[in-house]
Amino acid sequence: MLTKNQLGLLYMFLSVCTFSIMDLLVKWSGDYPTGQVLFFRGFFGLLPTYFLIPRDQLRTFYKTKRPTEHIFRCVMGLIALVAIVIALRELPLAVVVSLSYAAPLFITILSIFLLSEKVGIFRWAAVIVGFIGVVVISEPGFIEMNFLYFLPIIFCIGMAFVTITIRKLSTTEPIWLISIFFTITISLAGLATIPLGWIMPNFQDFILLALIGVTGGTANLLLTQSYKLSEVSLVAPLKYLSLVFAIFFGYMMWNEIPTFKTLIGASLVIISSLVIFRREIYYKQKILSNIRHD
Image (cartoon, rainbow, N blue to C red; front, top):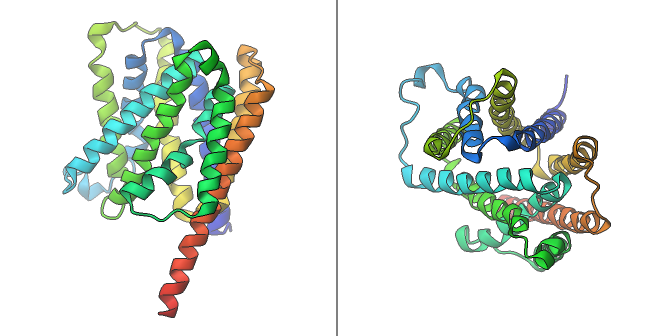
């Protein structure tokens, strides 16, 4: 029988694998409009989430007392998703994955203003090191004035807002409700792009597009379950396995070889993110210890 921490590690590993598969499918779907991919990501992403809705709430699942926060989460999530889909199609897989690791840096900064959290010198130092890593990875984009390199950064900023909003929402709202509102939003946003031109997929491509939604929805649920069962500091390092997958599949599928600077920059971003995770856990334990002694 597995312990909670062991189950958490298993769920995180499965989440990383599933997200990596989704990234591959998104990159493969380059012949189809971004809006069409968004629709499939949303519509078929509803399938895994549907089974989590309590049977007695199927008819009233949409009821909430916090619509404004849900709307904000959905808008920021939509911006982040559009940015990462375009980036995955246009940039090397390892570069996109490496830059996406910068999300904790933005979460740390935004938490100061939105959650009134105090950030110590260690986390500030980690943020600075992480941003140096981002600059190292993005250097080709700065030199060539290639705006595509900014898309993973936009994704990180969007996900930082999403993460902080979910932290607030999850105090009263079930995770499945937060997920469903988002998947419905991206489905409708994708559907609205039909006038811009959709391509009728053949059967094989239809399955590919549908799998983008299924894998995306499943990966999010696995990630949530992992954080629910285990300490974040224990399971978070497994997320960085996705860079190994990105390098492997990028080379095997598209003959992409990451540059030395990309690997150095990715290492700096990963180290800074791990320091941030560890310091957050340290402060939480310190606060709990003070409460128990009061």
